[in-house]
Length: 165
View 1 (cartoon, one colour):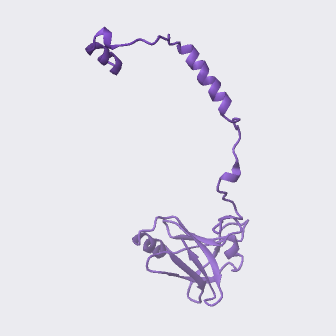
View 2 (cartoon, rainbow, N blue to C red):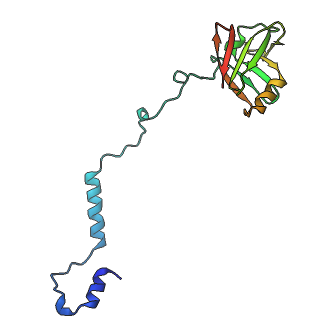
């Protein structure tokens, strides 16, 4: 029950002074609202303004992982793939060794006499591959989810590729 009805129920007729009645017309109220809405609202935009969005593309992402990127990946079987950018510097049969830091976030690769021999990843690219199951196991023991990609850069002081995941 509304407040007005409660007040009227407890009072006598002489306590209430009637000043006039207005019949409520729902359709009229709806029309008024529609008129106000169109009167005050701006034009409706049907396209997206991409200047309000954050852009991600090859030129804005430092870790671009395409053909031009320098990276190595390690999968669950311990297969290591070197990107085209890294693989082009090494001949098939060149030997490399890897260094992994304690948390498993940095992987370093450099040439070594007693290293793993590189193989061609496929006949159409300069990418290289090799297998080191111990490296895959070590990464898993450190809690790294495989496969993992290390984005790499050449370190002149170390004469090695340094990758960070």
